[in-house]
Amino acid sequence: MQRITTDICVIGGGSGGLSLAAGAAQMGARVVLFEADRMGGDCLNSGCVPSKALLAAAKAAHHAHGDPRMGVHGAPARIDFAAVKAHVADIIAGIAPHDSVERFTGLGVTVIEEHARFAGPRIVRSDSYEVTAKFTVISTGSKAAIPPIPGLDTVPFHTNETIFADTAQPDHLAIIGGGPIGIEMAQAHRRLGCEVTVIEATTILGRDDPALAAIITARLAEEGIRLVEGVGVSAVSGKAGAVRIDLADGSTVNASHLMVAAGRAP
Image (cartoon, rainbow, N blue to C red; front, top):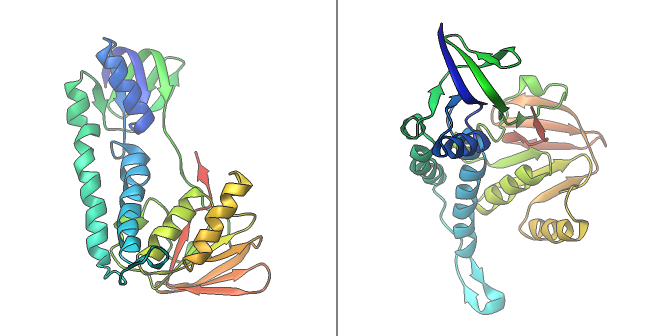
């Protein structure tokens, strides 16, 4: 096992960990960074970057319709869904070098592509390294929370970690969760030609200002998104291409694809 003594040990190579590592290294600190998965973390690979790239494509499709209220008449956009996803992948690939192992190594950061665990108050270990640091920063981010819905484990579903790589256009995308992630994906997919239903057990955008949330939900409904509020999901069943979502009020939503956007977990 290789032993390293350093000033700062950062666990997690997402946006927070990378910002800290780059800044500290440029100010002369010795920095070790552990990242066992993809550099750039959620923001680059399955969060901010791909979601905004998808929304940009959806906005382009939406504007193709014009605005008759302003005397501008357009036509429905022709959507090449696989090409849209290729655009998303290209945007990620264009930014990835800025978050890469090579760039951070060039900044003087020692990057270890292994899982890290604490072995003492100031000692962090992986399979191959033992790092003793003056300061250790945990910047491991979060992942999609998966609610304990009966049958969910038997049905294929997307989270934000998988939906951007799927090049198949859903006929009908059902989204469990009406928070920011679910609503972004709802509007993007609707504008890209999909039928969309959002199911939220409490209130759509419930953590946001109610007046602003009301403006957004009205716009989403105007664009043809079905919003189901105040009703939980009691069970999920089906298979790829044919998913059934049973709601607590006895009603049912049938969809071709399912996305779970029910919050985040450590």
